[in-house]
Amino acid sequence: MAEVRRVRNGPFGYLLRAFVIVYLVLLVAWPLLLVVTHTFAHGTESLQALFADPDLVAALRLTALAAVVATVINTVFGVGISLLLVRCEFPGKRLLSAFVDLPLAVSPIVVGLALVLVYGGRDGWFGPTLESWGFQVVFATPGIIMATAFVSLPLVIREVEPVLREVGTEQEQAAWSLGASGWQAFWRVTLPAIKWAMIYGVVLTLARSIGEFGAVKVVSGNVLGETRTATLAVEEKYLNFDQDGAYAVAFLLASVSVLCILVVFVLRARSARRFSAEGQ
Amino acid sequence: MSIEVSGVNKRYGDFVALENINLSIPTGGLTALLGPSGGGKTTLLRVIAGLETADSGSILIEGTDATRLAVQKRNVGFVFQHYAAFKHMSVARNVAFGLEIRKRPKGEIQARVEELLELVHLSQFAHRLPSQLSGGQRQRMALARALAVEPTVLLLDEPFGALDAKVRKELRDWLRRLHEEVHVTTVFVTHDQEEALEVADEIVVINEGRVEQVGTPDQLYDAPANDFVMGFLGSVTTLDGQLVRPHDIEVSLAPAGPDSIEGTVSRVQRIGFEVRLTVLTDDGEVVTVELTRPHARRLALEQGRVVFLSALFEPAKPVLVAGA
Image (cartoon, rainbow over all chains, first blue to last red; front, top):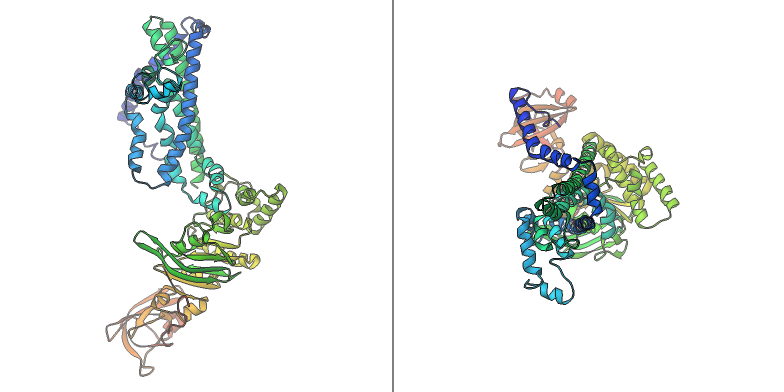
């Protein structure tokens, strides 16, 4: 904690703080606040209107579904890939590690287009075959889930991996020597040890998934009531001069994200306390 | 014999960790695997536990061939240098772990855990988390956890290596007493010769992947098989080209016999109850001599004084041959 307190209290220190505050207010706080004030400009009327619109309720439901499924997939694979990266030595490991970060670097639009190239129903690489089996990916829910999972792929891994590395394998070995099978050791010893990192990763993944726009826009086809997600609804309402509606949906999305960040904040404080207790 | 190791080899790439190890460890004994870091003693312990597999050779535990047996099936208790405590579980749950895995009845587990915590003097800490214990307490917890499953053999990997000197010493005495109570065949790894000499019934000296000598602490100290064992167990110096213990050199002010070697005291160091002399002989040899303070005072030893040195005992001859 000593380093955190090393804030300079001279005039430069105050100037720096003022600068940071102005920057954050102009860039983040004020715009978000305006979303809130616009939403409630006519009381809760615009929010009520939202929930009365079945297409929009469908959009919110689709966003929730895609986010939850993508998060579940990324949690299972994320923990698996983290175990692989930390515990195993194999050729191409560094390449895999770099690949994991790719979704953060690539623009979501590119992700969407790439998915269409592979799974596109008409001239995708694999899409026509799948469609002949009666399974549509692009312009359907599976495509939306895939696009969402793709963009939020690294978040669980990057949280879990360093914790897993720090925990080491001795606790697992101790569990084995006491008779626990590999699965029992994982379930009873490893998983509890990475629990907080995993929850943190899940919350971040959820927040990222709910807000995904670019990749989803390309693969969804934006069919009203079917493949239109909440973020796409915001865009459409905005373009159709339904500003109140756009702000109301935006407010809902932002609230969920803020809630996620609050959860992360609480978890962080909790794990910080745990760590300081263990450091003694 | 409780543990029979025969013809065990283990390599990591080019590095030979264990080279043709043959070893018998008696039932009910407290055996130390002693040697310098990187000498292969921890690898041997882990091979016995089943946490590593040997490239060749076999391991018998109480007559059962354990060579291909998974660590879970060997029924060994293993204690790690850094405790390997299950951090999210209370002390009692840590100790209960092996019994819970074995699906013993709840009442039995509780009774056994209480009994073990009593044994390691941690009863009042049953509901604490490991992070709330001191290092010594954590290691006692780890020991109780390993003993809970009634292992055939108890294996300890540098169990006191992460503790400070005072706690180390306490735990050493305590381990010795515990072993007298529990009587399970125990093997512990250490690089501390004092620890091995003090605690073990039998010491196996391991260096560069080979067994250098096996014997009781007295045998090893008094009759080391080779220069390495002699040098590793206690301090040594050379006198007339031969290895001797610094406290086995007689210092006198006049020649004590035909073999006396003349030299000049170049340094007098006082370390607690003993005095360490550095003597430069006329042949140009630098000899370290240890003697008690009263003895040094009687001879009025000081820098520049001419003294005569002779070995109190004949230099050690190899008695026990490694692996024989």
